[in-house]
Length: 376
Image (cartoon, rainbow, N blue to C red):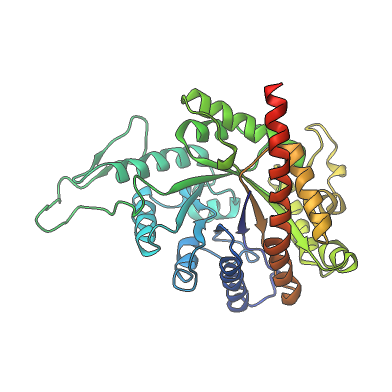
């Protein structure tokens, strides 16, 4: 199992963005030093608590300060820009990073972003689907472009102005061939969109918002999509994000991870609960779809959605999660505000140096038993 990193990021609104942006950069640099496989960074335009407005710009500042970690948009919100702009910028980033790039995509869920852009009444899921079709067409074709896909609002042409001898009318193709890995964040239980991901060989990242019992619905749908496309489902392609805090002792783990009024985990889940309730998307926090809204409390979210404790306890919790969800290829560690930087860094260090080796040794011991059971 690989170890990845994801940050929205999410900070208290009174904090100075210059400082929080620097802390967010430091967390990715630390993840690189600790051997994390990838780092996904989100973007929003109109949220005071979420300070990254363009994930590609943010990640570009980290290319020279990191060595091995893959830098991933988490996500590029495809309904918010013309696909020509995103295709050109993502391809250029792939060249700058020399292939250390993962193209994370989504429609863009924040309603205030959509309102500010004048697309609140638009079907943003459809805009997303049309945009990715055009982006892939740009990357697959040669100039001059004459992209007019049936039913797609985005028409792309450079035929009138193309000048091959000047290179005019030509767009970047990505550094990676035929394209970067494409990852889609999945939030809703039983998401039908993840079936399409499987069909197109996009890889799912199940959000840390989701109660664990819903996770298997993502894998089941992804596997269905892969089979429809005539491919064998591969659990290594599935990422699962979780909110995790690892400490040297139980008392620190409970205090910083759940109990303190100033806990960044408490702040995070208080914010997420309110936002998801207002957006009518809080089914992800429910034990079943018809459960009363009153059951969705911050205390429940802290209990069910924060893997918290010493190394031994977090190892046990991760193995239990894998038992419940099924095999997956990467656990994606969700970054928080650095209320106490020493504890935030220590958690990442313990996660990389102690938790993951133990988890992978345990998985390795389980694998022979699983193969034997399959033969029987």
